[in-house]
Length: 214
Image (cartoon, rainbow, N blue to C red; front, side, top):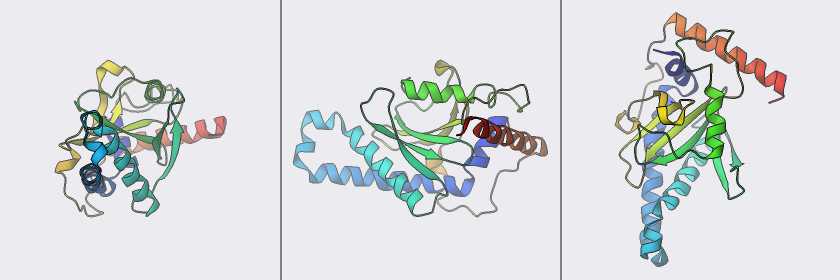
């Protein structure tokens, strides 16, 4: 287990991950039903952009998952770098999660400015086997929640590499294939060295927050 995998397990444990498939399936079903029931969404131009309906339903699903207390996290709506709208940011104890529809789960989503800025926060702290004091924290690490475009055939949590073209430092297996219910005790074993490294990283993130008023 490398640094990024151990950190991701700390931030999104298996019990929480088991909620993701159901939330996505419910959102996709709601989006499909809404399109079928709304005539003007069935014209060709609307069908070509049905991914937007799915994205909005997914955002709504995860907002409600957090508001219900099932996912112990917070959320906020952040503006895009260009003032064309907002995106959902899920706030965990020491990281943030954003959600993206992608056609290819092995590649990072489109390289828009806000993702690029967040991706740089992983620099020097999650792309090595273990965190050390020489690595500089420059922001909260960024986690991507990826799901299938139009067809819900996969979902992954991934830590993006600093270089957009190099994919991910670490990415989970397909969450759509995991059990819907996971016992609280069912967690992947974390070696002592990984645990210590993650704790050191979290302490450095806390120090960065304090120094930067974040």
